[in-house]
Image 1 (cartoon, rainbow, N blue to C red):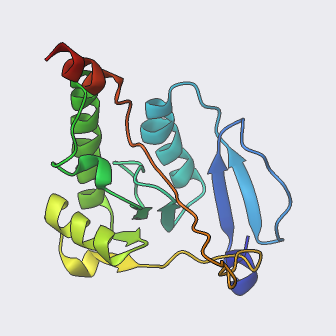
Image 2: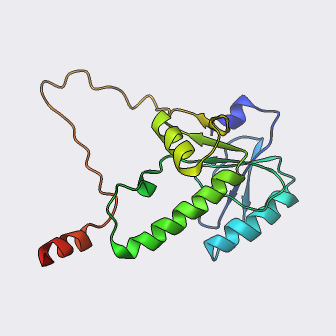
Image 3: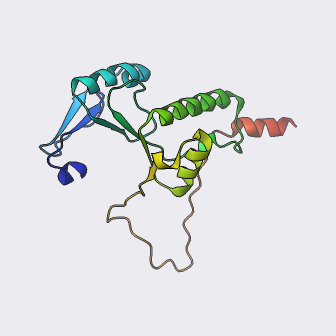
Length: 178
């Protein structure tokens, strides 16, 4: 929403599928709707064709996926590689999926001209896990809207956040069997 305001001389194009909510943003912003059936087909066939048709110079992906074969420069975002770190226990059914995701993420990171991440730790993980040069990765810290602000008066109250990265049911059942 903000970028078109800062670069009015540029044209911004959002490539989206038929389910994406679309609204007017600016005169220099437009949507290109690409009908999606299979995600892989959309990412790797239909999107590169649309990029060529629109004569795109640079494609920015807000996550780790993007077209492997496209004519333009590619910038991807990798927020976190925690699911790929070796110290996490895995249910057997998730190991293959995680391994495939790590492999494809690694290929995409190598294909990208630039990687944006949002923390120093994520940058270190990307360098370590994917063996990439530090110069290829830029940190852009996450911004906040004004409605988010530090809590000033907590009076001993604490806010906790618990995140579970995968279903632990299989691990519990395995422990019970022992």
